[in-house]
Length: 261
Image: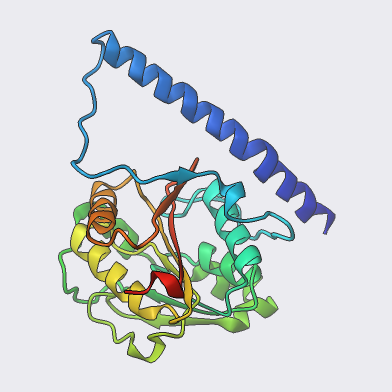
């Protein structure tokens, strides 16, 4: 417990603020260099910029716990993992659907910080896909097996792992209908090309309970197609609240019955 408390203090009150400072310095440097003509200005992708809020306005770090902090290429970063854990602790979902298991690091932490049944979908390495998987995404598909961080010792003996169900298939063709209207939190971190982001988003909207829930997208501002799709979503569905969480590549939509259309 002491170790988790120290970890929590370090991540939320030292690591994330220092990360924010580094990002602010980087952005200031880019603007200065662009103003001096030392680098080209970055053109907008044509969409509106999402409003942003600090993580503290959406969730509390109280009680958050962490497993498998070591990050590999394809994982959310430590700040994003911390925010996801805090969202779970604060919103207390009873059911979670994750699209994009990868090695199961996020899956494990979602289960650890909630009492939810966690369903996580991943694409088998030899599966056919509805939409073309871009070359940049192929390395994330070609892994030994999804969910290794929760299905292998020592984590596979944790009680929370018993609430994780691994699903297999292509999110573009998988039958999600058994979960329509039954999910409290959907985390979208699957394929990053435009067609999959749009398809996964439409599925997420159908998965949420009628009384509301939360959708979280990863890689906003990192993968161009993710950013484009979310900017277009804001234009097409202005009633749907979309908020970028500062210092992360996470976008959240916390829906209530008033948001339903």
